[in-house]
Amino acid sequence: MDKNEVDPIQTDVQTIDDWLRARAAVITQPVAERLARLNMHPNTLTITGFVLNLAAGLIAASGRVVGAGILMLLASGLDGFDGALARTSGKQSRFGAFLDSSLDRLSEGAILLGLLWWTMGQGQTVMAELLGLTLLGSVMVSYTRARAEGVGYACKVGLLTRPLRVVLLGLGMLTPWLLPDLVVMTVLTWYTVAQRVAHVYAASREDP
Image (cartoon, rainbow, N blue to C red):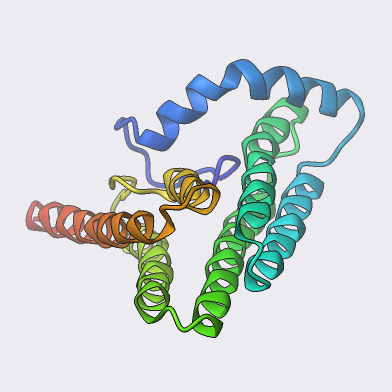
């Protein structure tokens, strides 16, 4: 979730991410103010979260899925603080936004690849295929927004953005229902891609 990113395409539409960020502010803002007094840099939180997610991916690859899920959720929780810290401390920057977005993609990929490695080793073909489709779909969710904004269209629409994917995947990793969880993730991830493509198509039809 690119919380410290300044979107060059202005839009008045409130997204699910915006709603979640607003609800979480009661927790993130006081913590961010405390971290700002300690002179913590937001990029430090971003990098720390990535390293922890990378460790979670390695743990998942070893088959300790529940432990990996717990660490992933804790690491991803830091993602709720780096943007708040950037705004509170006045340390927002274009590079910070770029770093946050890039490491978010790598963090998600590390977890999914770790699970993919484990499922392939266990001979769980269906689950491995679902993980591959979810990984590709998550990349496309991000790419469609970035490409749309690159050609001048705001594209924050979509049901399953990264925060919800993290929560959904975490729930699957902490319960015995990882397979049905991945079915839901795969379907909703690609549905989100379709939503963004349809949104850009509709917007393009309004061009003079």
